Length: 201
Image (cartoon, rainbow, N blue to C red):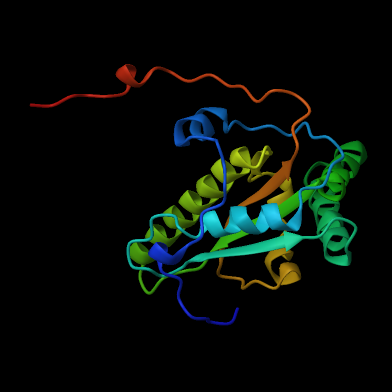
């Protein structure tokens, strides 16, 4: 992907939203029950712009995003890979068809990769940064009235997926993001923070 002039954080035009950071954090729950409405390209672009401001220690910009248009040829090709991978794993025709249909039906679908660094340490940092970018994107989705499902399952595991999307063989899969307008409230549970926190003198 081509290099371009760098964006300074002080010059970013912030989208208008009434969603607070805390609301976005608490409302960002996995949800894959979507209406048929397709998120606008403007909304997806705002979410991607939020993603790139994730923590990135060495400013390596390690994230790579592939947005698959609904009804497009590339979406269809990736759906077939999902079908093939599922069927080769367990021979279950219904599961394979379901995996393909999930890719085809997603209102919006974004694949995210992390590129390797010059060392194992940098590669690990790059992957962590790309995961933070996904979190940023999904928090921005809440502000857009959307929900998302961050998947690392069957739809991300075909060995030819990266090449089909235009990526490199040594890139690390971060996940497939299924995004849309939720048809049900997003909810989950967590252990309280005091169970996993030690305050040290």
